[in-house]
Image (tube, rainbow, N blue to C red; front, side, top):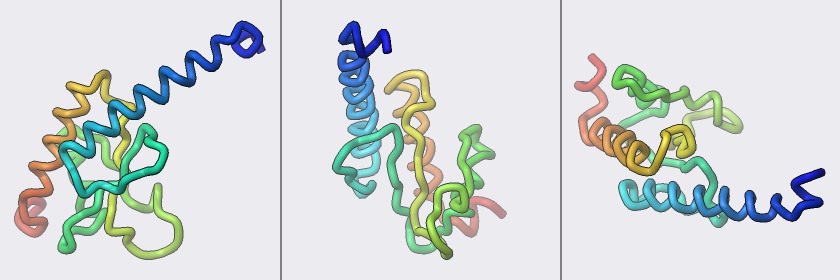
Length: 116
């Protein structure tokens, strides 16, 4: 209530929206085919190559990146063909860019040879 009464809530919301937009621009720069959201959030949907399943992509955990299997974000049954990427966890946009570059490198490899 104090934030609303003081008028600081709007300022905080505006700052968070700008942070989300800044981070969302990073994923779109590195992954131009990422789903375009009307209202950028602290996550993005990364389409996976056809030969990849979201569960295979979850194996990126071995590279020090927390990737949750598709079941955590999927609605309905079946593989969504995409993975939900959290953009808010890295400490800043430089760290976010580094993580997304690592994910891009992982996806550049063939799924069958990467995780055998």
